[in-house]
Image (cartoon, rainbow, N blue to C red; front, side, top):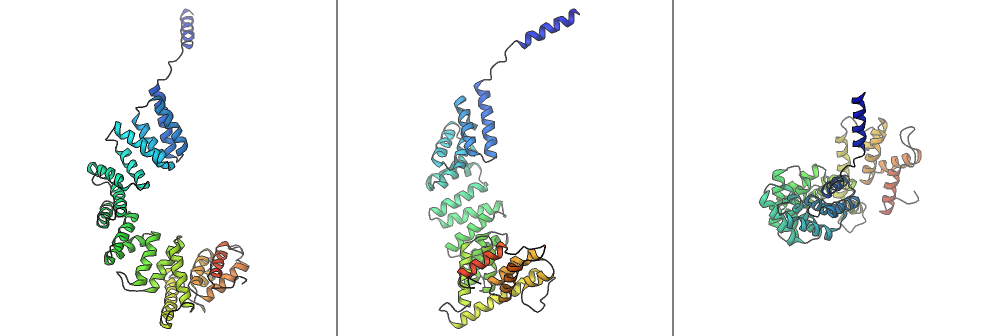
Length: 353
């Protein structure tokens, strides 16, 4: 009984003792952790607030200052980001991430000379860092140094052959240097990997015979792929070809015949994407897909065929728009309407129709 009483007194005494207040350093660490978590979630404005609070409690907390610069850069406040990151580097010159972020902010500000200084500083410490070589390629191009930009983008690809933005930029630099024999294979490699702008330039190379044999049907193929990824120049290139094919351009009759044939060749090549299908009284892959009940595949293919001047495909799209397909496609499909609107604007069909 006496032992229980003593334990009760001890516990009561402990309950009355106040816990020590957290130190400013501990509080700063809490705000730093919160700020870094917010950056990871993309909530940059909230991260800035948390990180400023961390620095109010611990002004020399380098991680907080570096993270603050990153958050400000993410918000687009480039001047404030540069100021914070330079303050970080004055305190800790070997803060690698801060220097790399500073270089990115300077590139975004188009302060090319200052960005180059920071990137070359980074590369002296990390000579194989692809991100720094990529930034340096952008800077060298902006400074008119095509050879230097080509070298930088090649260095990126040496470390990461799958970096398609670097490959596309390398191809662009080579084309600007009029080295089409080297540029076109790079455009094609990036295009085959799905790079939309590279697909447009691959089409341009085939249309003009730049570094490859001229092949207008292949150019059309690449332009369709680029247009479907939202490249407006590809849409414009296809629209110009359609005007030639329809005789609305002051081209020679032979040019018109060549373009008409290229569109026919493009439509014929679509069958290769569906080896199990065969024509049955029409020339549309989309129609064959409809007969197989593959409606979700048929609609985009019919749009491609109609945009490649297939009248049967256009008529099928009109029927699908009006009637739909029971249980598979409602009438008035938005994709079909989008095609009709574009075709009407281009003069390919009557707006009333």
